[in-house]
Length: 269
Image 1 (cartoon, rainbow, N blue to C red):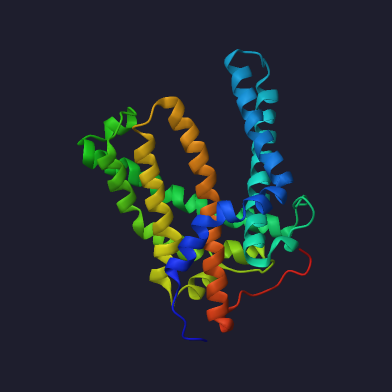
Image 2 (image 1 turned 120 degrees about the vertical axis):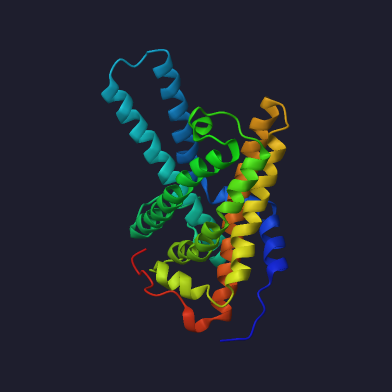
């Protein structure tokens, strides 16, 4: 194990520039995933519109349509995330042609880990929203009535979830490891990030959270139409930034800790 210093500034700057510096490569290698993702969202918009106008008389057909739409979105998001991780860590040649099209055990594991961690976040975050709402508004019924909460409530919520962000930051190395054909576990990810855990929390978790909070506060004061455009653009940027900062951090930790490499290279992926 080398005695390296975690390059916080270098990783953040490289990740911040990634949507531009890797932009052409990312678009050229992400065609199947991007098409599936866009098609899935357009499909949902069409179904919602048709349902609102009562153009779909069969609930079964409507439900089946939503299942197909969500399947396309899951397929698209998974392929894009794996593609970006592989480009950042292995180079453009690690992604064939215009992008990954097949669904292998690697994609299944990647989606499964995302689903598991996402469910954990929901289980913790939802009760927290009601608790903070009750404390800040003085009445939990205000939250149930969907009354608007101010910036103070938003900031209080994000502050309260910092411990969860810390945990997720350390577990998140399971994604670049899986995307590059390893078979990691949550225990391995926790041990892998132990030596630099505070730097990992700062770079992987806190930096993204701060940008997200800042953009939400800014979007709240913009005109509605401009806020929609702003949120879409920032959403894409943050998606690429988040994957880049995680990939670059993972790459450093692998080089600095050759004795803690992820287990089980998947030869079939």
